[in-house]
Amino acid sequence: MDLFQQGTTIPTKYKNLTMEEMENRVKKLKEKFGDKLFIPAHHYQKDEVVQFADATGDSLQLAQLCEKNDQAAFIVFCGVHFMAETADMLTKEEQTVLLPDLRAGCSLADTANIEQTERCWETLQQTFGDTVIPLTYVNSTAAIKQFVGKNGGATVTSSNAKKIITWAFTQKERILFLPDQHLGRNISYDLGIPLNKMAVWNQSTNAFEFDGNIEDAKVILWKGQCSVHENFTVENIEQVRKDYPGINVLVHPECPYETVAKSDYAGSTSYIIRMIEEAPSESKWAIGTEMNLVQRLIQAHPDKEIISLNPHLCPCMTMNRIDLAHLLWSIESIETEEYKHVIKVDKKTTEYAKLALNRMLEHV
Ligand code: 13P
Ligand code: SF4
Image 1 (cartoon, rainbow, N blue to C red):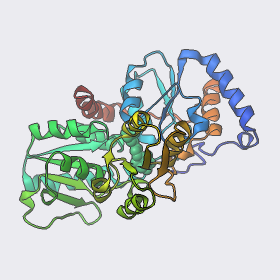
Image 2: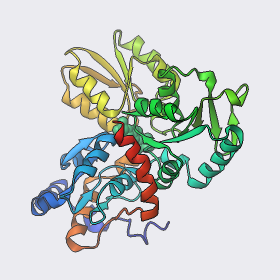
Image 3: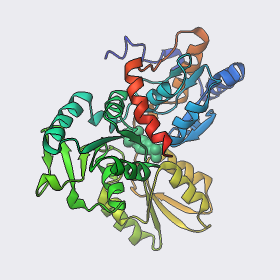
């Protein structure tokens, strides 16, 4: 895609504005649009954007909020592309979802495309027959969600993966879990499935990675991972435990299995926030997740000692694409009716993807 032709490059005039000028303009436009404009922001967004959010949340909460909101004609989604797609699919036809910067993708979602998924499924059908149900983390394209919906499966988020995997095993003997191998492995292990019953599907070689008889596999994990969370390691945990005796290690389940196994707690972004809010004063925490959220927690809880689990704080480059200038550009584009940038999933994809999303929403 030629990003310039798509109108993705922000006009220079925005680069010359001060923060104060941008803040004043956003405030005015928010007042002007009132309930007609809804701005949800993921917990990983920058403070300069979060200050204007009508709601913040993890990916499940944001999806639910968008589904419930039938007043907003425009939803300016401060998050990444798959979240805006989900919002579009869960809202009414006449509601418009905008993503302030089209370059806000997700390295994890990018590890699975529909052609690779169809190839994998063909091999799974040949190998296991009709014994597999597909599940996809919401961090995936609408096309993958559509594939999963069509084949009887559901989406999951990090806050409901346990429930949905449990449900999936009432439907079929095996699951295919896309695209985050770490989340799939961590949650399946928590549910009592041993590692030697989990195979990895390598989408680059079109082959299983598994020691033993493949028929013993209960969980087939897509070989995808998040470029942010894969950077939290066992060595990081050993280091913080040495440097800060008594520290609690709290990580997101997108971290590798070995990291999660050595941590004290693991859960979604909302779970991480709740744990810190409920922690006693003076307690010490090393958090393994995206840096905007860790920094916000550090600022909000000066009575607790909070550090990033990885001293080279891990930013999500794509979440960080949404800055105040892009937010302003997006909202002003509503005024001029030159919308930047509309996220619209076609009807057919939406129909099946919604089956997968609704199966998830029914169980949470
Ligand atoms: P949450 O659902 O926990 O908010 O996670 C979303 C995400 O992209 C984490 O990397
Ligand atoms: Fe995607 Fe990872 Fe960024 Fe979450 S933190 S949006 S999974 S790249």
